[in-house]
Length: 102
Image 1 (cartoon, helix red, strand yellow):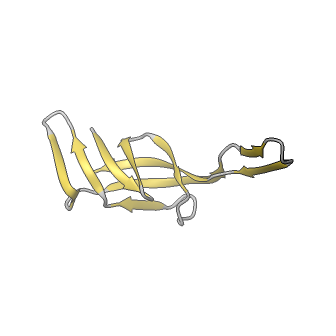
Image 2 (tube, rainbow, N blue to C red; image 1 turned 180 degrees about the vertical axis):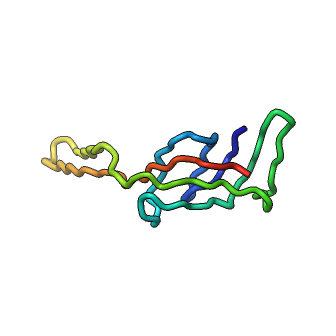
């Protein structure tokens, strides 16, 4: 059984007892969160597709930790003018575990 759920503006295909890195959530670690913006649910019997979301299906997850992704370096340069600019960025992430679909 899997579901397609919208988490913080991004869509994820999730299955039960799986762990995912999602954009930073406001919940504290070791708390439960519920996502009700489920677009699709599929299992052995068939699938249900929402327009845009399914109203009777929710995905429950547990927040495991907050962390930062690896640093991404941005370097801009224009030749023959002496212009160089270097920036770095680390994305804020949350690690969650899907506990229940349904």
